[in-house]
Length: 237
Length: 237
DNA sequence: TAGTGGTCTAGACCACCTC
DNA sequence: AGGTGGTCTAGACCACTAG
Image 1 (tube, chains in turn brown, blue, yellow, orange):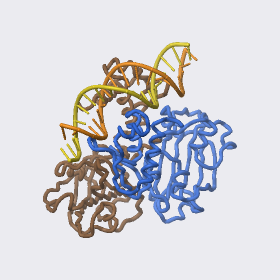
Image 2 (cartoon, rainbow over the protein chains, first blue to last red):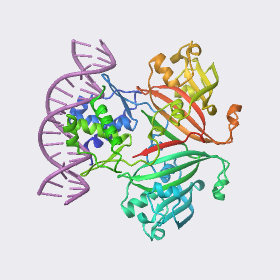
Image 3 (cartoon, rainbow over the protein chains, first blue to last red):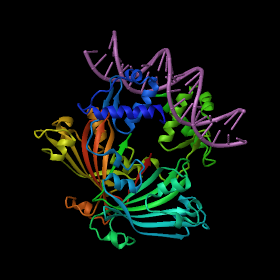
Image 4 (tube, chains in turn brown, blue, yellow, red):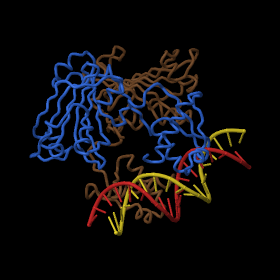
């Protein structure tokens, strides 16, 4: 039981799931929902606004709220929502694993100095690995984490999986946002042999990961095959 | 002036622009802002929420609102915000133009039938063109528009530029949202000669464009060189 | 014209940060 | 303990849709 409006929002969502009958089915009016759930109209509005934001319903002023028809694209695989590579692989119904993990330490490069607000004297850890989906190598990932954040003994503590989850668990740092640059990659010499094997073209994701206070926490590079996993963006006004 | 909270939001944004003094400068409290602008606290909260959504500020419960430090990436070039290819090129400070425009008509393909909810008997117009940025060809675009929406005499009416703007102007249809799939392209036989010239790798954007009532209006394919234009996504929880 | 969602208000209480 | 943002309420008026 967190917030009332989140609770109501998911209860409405459940009701929508049950009544798949008509496309664009009309929801009850705000007032009716307020009576039904015994809350104020503003709370209902917050719940409905949330459902609009996640793409379940839409509203027409003066008319009502309607169920948004599905286009067959799963909303969870939208990369404008923050999720780890681990989750991306899982939401494509593949089983995630790690291969050839290497961790080492070096001085930050120029770009890392400015983006992570570090000093030349600082150290960064590089987590270098190949991610697999159901056995197949699909992503070559590199994470760049400041020693000042993860501590000197990071290599002993680290375990395979999402860096974001690691930070939550061991350092109570919550990544809530990221800026990502997307590039198409023709050939990248720095790629490990295992990833070059595949003939499929690669997408390169470069990300800056931020916590709730808008502080940059770590950087990541992901070279993703996009034959097994597909990437969608929801673009809104 | 449209909404009070939008008006106030941009006035606060202006004040932030003037006081670039300190990073993470603290804004006045909600109550102070409410007094200053002579509105209720809820209206101030709406204005501030809008500034959070566009990435200008962040808030910490129990503490206050703070100016979000810039990471050098221009927020306008985020592809999770709906914008036309025309606007993308312009916001990269390049001058947009069209080359080799071709318009023709054919029956919809299987995928188009389902995505645009058309019938086999319907027609679609294909707008095929190369977009240039400051003279250089940067995008090969294909737009797919149902005849039932743009009318039989579409070819005579069409003029170079954004399809979204065309629909607004001639048909009062407002595109407010799109679903985009991003792919890396190795080699695509269907590309015109002019686009193959460049050695740079290509990103393929496939989009479904929706109006405010969540109706699919048209489809588009864009094969974009990403050496001249860079693509960013803001990912939030 | 009646009904619906959209905006705005004023006030209450709670959760969290800071001192 | 006091101050701040987060949630919730109840009510007013406006803008728009639809019959």
